[in-house]
Length: 87
Image (cartoon, rainbow, N blue to C red; front, top):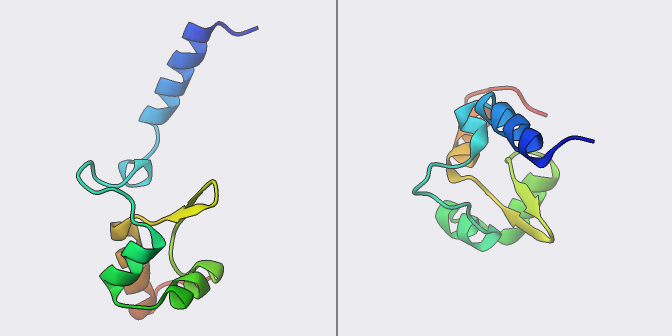
């Protein structure tokens, strides 16, 4: 059985190894909801749902809610626009 203090240290050690861009959005930016993303990109909710289903944009699913890192979405869309890898 692993001690709680050892488990906490193991988690801390692993978190240090995660690249910063994967960690989370910048501290000042909270993840966007689907409606906020629609307003930011000036697109409809069905478009976001289609893009999400086709994995054109990155997202997090927390319970039944979807959240989006604005910088990651912008990056994914510009990669596609510039002929980057498609899934």
